[in-house]
Image (cartoon, rainbow, N blue to C red):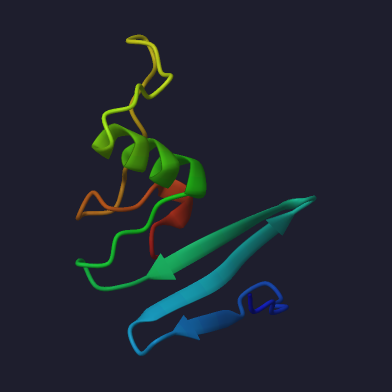
Length: 85
């Protein structure tokens, strides 16, 4: 595992087409922005685990009253805190 330090407004480039930027740091929370082509899916790890469990046919642990994950990117592939600016 590669561990890097970044300050607010600094970025990391993954491959040649994914940019991860630190947009805000508030206490022990870091807000990241991802810039990637539409074919690259971006999920928080807990959302990714739920998707994988659903693909395996396992129950998600969510109740019918749970709201679905919010999505705001035009492609519907990223969550609000992860959407590219």
